[in-house]
Structure formats: structure tokens, C-alpha cells
Amino acid sequence: MAENSSRKKFIFDWKGAFALIGGMIVGTAAVSVINVFSMFVFNENLQYKDFYLMLTNAAGFLGAIFAFDYFIARPQTGRKLNFNFSPTNVGTYLLIFPMMLGMMFIAEFITAQIPITGPFFGEYYEFFSRLMEQMTKDKATMIVLAVIMAPIFEEIVFRGIIQKGLINKGMNPVTAIIITSIVFGLVHANPWQFVGAVLLGCVLGFVYYKTKSLLLPMLLHAFNNLCSSILIFYGDSESFADVFRLSEWIVLAIGIMLFAVFYYLFTRKYRIHYSEK
Image 1 (cartoon, rainbow, N blue to C red):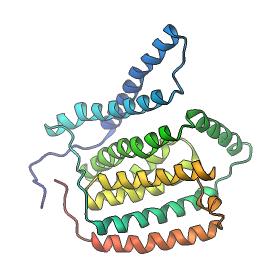
Image 2 (spheres, rainbow, N blue to C red; image 1 turned 180 degrees about the vertical axis):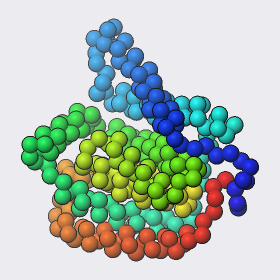
Image 3 (tube, rainbow, N blue to C red; image 1 turned 90 degrees about the vertical axis):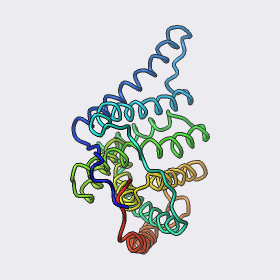
Image 4 (tube, rainbow, N blue to C red; image 1 turned 180 degrees about the horizontal axis):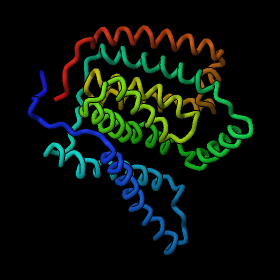
């Protein structure tokens, strides 16, 4: 069904970027008050407590989404943000998950080429590794943060707000997907996650653009993070090649084959797609 042309769409520009950043800062700052209170009253730092990590994460993203909704989307459109979370047919799921897995293999190979030693990369990698280790070792907390919260909040912000807002502004969809994916990679703040985030972000953005449902990129995002979590928990590595003792080149070859075949099938299925309501 064609979208009603008289219905205003929100756009994403520098004002929207400030709203997202400001909302996230305010949200996390509000939660930090709890930690300050705890330190003064109970002499206990909650910074690395599991519940505090989850609370801070949720507050930051909810603050960003609320700020964009209240200060940008509603003034522009006259209504609150509304996202499509519609499920799709089984056939589509059978196409997008192998396509995502293929890109995960490709991203792993490219990421493996980034040095982890040397005067710059070595120190940075050690700092990043220590930072990750300090967060939490509790499996349940990691699953909640990485497999549930991150896919929901990050897909709403990056695909549902930024990518959609750029396309609504008139930007070419391919350009909007690439820009959003690069920003998605940059917020991870390290070169090893940047590569994967950009490549996988392109798949997430492409699937969202074609299907118009945020549910699908959320599920794909959760699938990627779940695989990484399982590899870390039971193999002490995020690498499929390391855990399954395969050559990086074999992983790359499988990835290219999976991605190429299922990308072709997916684009054939969604050669004609409909505007989002």
C-alpha cells in the first residue's frame, strides 16, 4: 500500500544528532546520581555492578530516543515516533539469517587482518581488552546486554531513527545505509569492532530498507551478538576460525558463498517493496 503523501515524515540532520547525543548524556547522567549517592552514603561504587551496567545502558538509549521523539519528531510530524515491528513470512527468515552469517564470516576475516601488536595497536588492544574484562563476567548479564538490550535500542536509534531519517530527508538509500553503518561502527570506538559493525550494519540497514520492519534487523543483530557471546563463553574467542580450528581463508570462502547466494535470493524476493506505513 502506498504511503499517504500528506503524512509528514521526520528527518535526521544535525539537530537530530544533537538531540540523540544530548538525550543520551542526560539519561546516563541521571543514573550516575544513583552511583554518587551510593558512594557518599554507603561508600560503594556501583560502576561495575551488573544491574548498574544494564540500568545505565537503558537510561542512555531511552534518553536519546525520548529526546529525538520530543524535540525533533513530534515538532516535525505532529505525532510521536512510531516504528514498524511486523514479523514476516518464514521464507524471508530463511534468507536473511544465512546472509547475515555470511557477512559475519567475511567481517571476521577482515577484522583478523588488523594488527593487535605494535606501538599503537598493541597498547590500544590491551586497553580495549582490559576494558571489556572489567565490564562483567556474568553470562546472564552479558546475554541481557548484548543479545536483548543492544539489538533493541541500537536498531531503533541507528536504523529506525538515523537511517530512516536520512532517507526521509531525500538521501539516496545506499548512501544513507553506508553513512549510518559508519556511524554505527564509530560509536564502538575501536578498530576491531569498527569493521564488523560497518559491514554488519550495512546488512541490517539493507534488510530494514527492503522489509520496512525493525523486527528483522533486531533479530539479526541479536543473532550476531548471541554467536559472539557463545564463542566467548565456550571458546574464549570471538573467532569462528579459532574455535572450530579452521583456516581464516576457509571461513572467508564460506562467508562469501553464503552472503552472495542469499543476498541474490533476498534481492530477488524483495525486488519490489512497499513504502512503510
